[in-house]
Image (cartoon, rainbow, N blue to C red; front, side, top):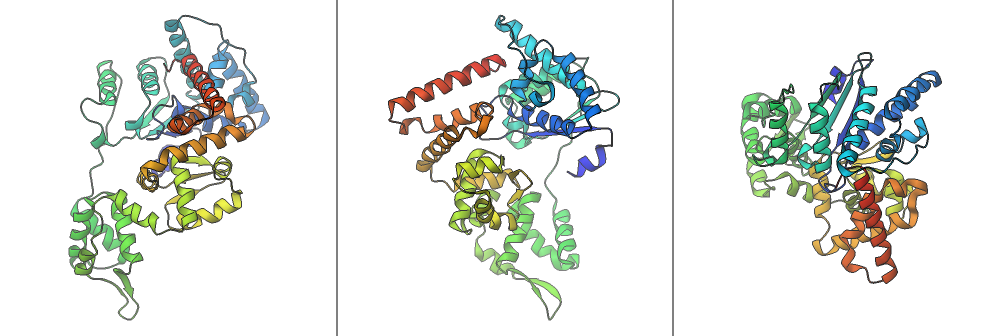
Length: 409
C-alpha cells in the first residue's frame, strides 16, 4: 500500500492479485481478480471513455473474446457476450489463449497509461498462471508493464518451480530486480518499541531483546506480540508515573508461543463462538471473500455477519471494505483454518459447497465453478445420495472442460 502511493501516478493503471494457499489447484484466479479490478475501474469512467475502451478491447481480442470473458466475467459488461471459439488442436489452443491474454494486457499497458501489476504470495501460484506469466514476460512486444511479485523466500527452495521460472527469465534477457526483505535486526526492533511507547533506548533494550528472541524479527509477529502483551497488561501504561511499564520475568513465565500462527490461534480462541465460526468459514473461502457469498454460506444476513465479525475487525485481524472481508495477514487465515478440527474440515467444506450450489448467486455459479467443485470434492467421502454423487461428477466434468478451454490442463 505504501509503494502504491509512490508509484501510482495519475495516468498509471494499477491492479493487484493474491495467490491463496488453499486454492492452489484453481487456475488463473489471481490474474482474473487483478484484471477484474481494471475492468471495474474502467466501468467507473465517463461514457465516452468507456466507449473507447470497448472499441480497443474488442479490436484486441476478436475473434477469441470468449476466452477472456470466461477468465474475467466482468468484461461481458464492457464488450458484450462473445461467440464460442472454434475447436483447435491443444498446441494451437494454448498459443491462441496466451496470445489473446497478451493482446488484452497490451490494451491496458500503453505509453499514455502504463500498467503496474502486483501479484502477492507467488510461492502459492497455480502452475497454469506460472506458465502464462513466464511466457508473457518473455515476449518483447509487451511493454509499459511493471510486474511486481512478492513471495516468502524461506518457502521457495532451489527446486521450487518459481526459482526455475526466475532463472529461465534471466537467461532470456528479461530485466529483473530483486529486493530481499530481511527480518528486523535487534536495533530496529528496539527503535520500533522506542517509537511506540516513547521510552529511552537503554531502558527498552532488555524488552527488545526478549521480543527479538520470541519473534525472530518478523515485523508482523513483533506487532502482534506487543499487542498481546498490552492486552494482558504485561505491557501497561502507568498513569501516575506517566510511562509504560513491563515485567520481563512475568512475560517469560507467561510462555508465549514461539511462532506467529500459534499466537494468532491463541488470540482467535479467545473470541466469541459466533466470531470463531464466521472466521472458520471465511478461512475456507479464501483470503478475500465477498460479503454476500459469506452471508449465504453462513446462512446469515449481512448485518448478522457484521455483528459476528465485529470483534475480529476491532482486533485488527480482519478488514471489511464495501463489498468484502479480508484477512489482515496470511498467518491469521492459517490460524483461523487451524481452529477447525481435522475431522471436521471435510464436513465444513462439503456444507459450503452445498450452499454454493443451492444458492447459485444469481449467475455467479458459473464464475465460481472451481470453488464449488473444490469444496465438494473435499467432502466427497461424506456424500451418500447417488443423485448428489452424479451431480458432483457433472460439476467436475464441467470444471475440467473449463480448465481445458483455458489451457490449464
